[in-house]
Image 1 (cartoon, rainbow, N blue to C red):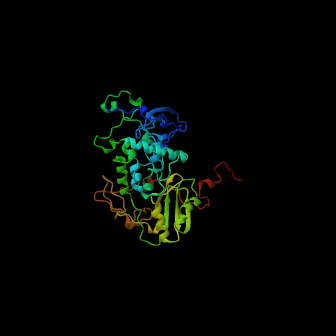
Image 2: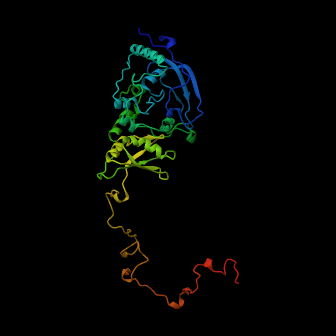
Image 3: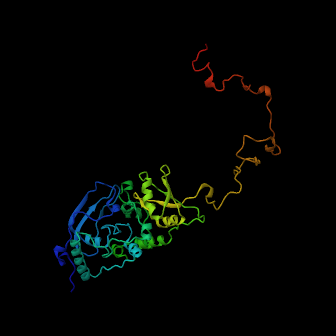
Length: 391
């Protein structure tokens, strides 16, 4: 008869005890005074099934409580967060990272081989001062990847910390209203692949629906088209914050080629980088498009066109005049609709049949002030006003 696996199966010396979890910025939350509940050996790791110290905390207001799911040894093997199991460097699933960097998973999945493998890893961690050696398992990635740079999330995504969906509200039986701590939203459809996520598949990078969605998005990413005019050597840099200076932008682009000029526009939060050669501008556009992150912000890179060489829109109106208003008589417009004060007598519109203009006799019109021969042109220049006295 096979015995069930319990905590007494393992040596207590291999149980993990830590003082603080390994978390990403999103799971930690935006609250700088977060309080954590610590429980030593309170749960088994969902990957290696060894007892470890769990942490539980609330990342912010109107958020759900979160806790650690895997031990720190498994977290360091894949360089992932202990809670969401996303890569700590890029914020992406391990399947996307391994596919972009062409990393093969060498972690065994059987119980005996996994225990032996983890014991050797812990010995390496002790020798290296708690850090994983480069390239071990699916650890920190040394080479750069264009796909990871384009898909990487540079800012925290706190929507992942929202409460779960209220099951009573889905059934139409929730009576708490706004006081309900859960979300009142429609859940995903049963056939939606995003509803079939689990921790082991995300950790090992196998059949992860979130990773499949991101890989499809990477295949359809936009490409920056190079202008046909060879004289254009200027790049537009958008989303520039207030703290970035001209020196910071120059330091990011100088190694692509010789820079002729860098113009910073603080009001528009953008900059223009002009290279001396077209080849240098093309290289800079290729290496920085949807990849450049400076000062914690992802900068937008475009080709800069002069005002005389702006690309014409595909659809333009042939008649720039205003559209006729329904309900009014169809009167012809003057030749120049923007010049209403310099119309000639021949440009006057012709009234339709049946419409007459009644002239008012001049004796009933108010007297209009004529031109004055004095030098006073404005009321403020009249000496009889504003309390002045005649001499």
